[in-house]
Image (cartoon, rainbow, N blue to C red; front, side):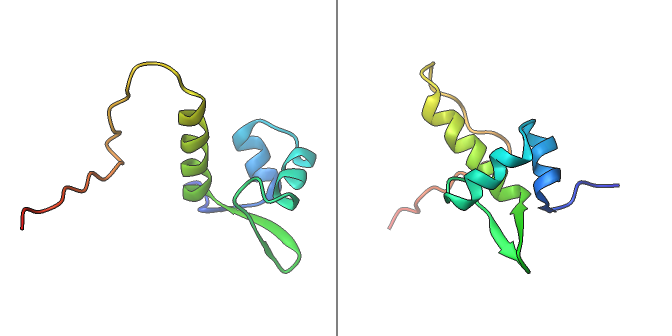
Length: 79
């Protein structure tokens, strides 16, 4: 079975290894990408992964990193 693209609070808590209460606080404060569906918080895995990558790069002070295979490099065409 593949991992779901849309995760519940419990799914994301296990994925991030944090408590569900922490996720509720982050979601309510708008500090983590989330949406309420029928009164329940839901998290889109690709958006969470991008959010994590952005946060980790903001905290990174080492040498420049090369793009991952997943990153799309867009080059401008010559006019």
